[in-house]
Image (cartoon, rainbow, N blue to C red; front, side, top):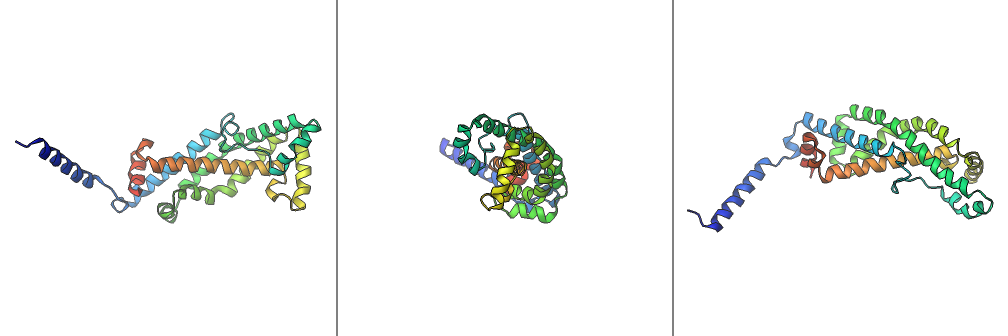
Length: 230
């Protein structure tokens, strides 16, 4: 009969043996398993980001992605308030954020298509990349398409804002003088870029959550593949 100390040591030894037997590395996974796991993780990250932002006040109530006035216009806020345009500025901020939330749902099919077209080279880059390699993949594959897709919807919403035309006129001149970046020359281009930034920020946040706790995603294949990366 074992004494208590020897029993504890025996159980610890068995636990370590069992853990070693269960440990999975990337070398143990087939290409199909790896590809399936990566695609599942990418789709989850994209879907979660879109669902969080593409709802009422998805941008406005999220300080990480809320779209503020461009710096040059924010600096002019006190003067504009003195001329009675303070409320219009506030309305413009709300309109910009609502425009972004209206555009984001259009991203989902484009993001999913990017996942479906992922090559083995893309997969290897994600596997060997850093903690944001999934987000980097989406940026590389979808930025131009999303910008083209977002812009008309953003413009449709921002055109309703009372200060939109004045913004465009003033910022266009400032852009020509090199005072502001070209992407801020119109309210729609500014909001479109901020909407893209917000979307990728949320994808990155979801990617980090998956990497931190792959088992917690509830997906066996994501847990297996991303668990092997840890």
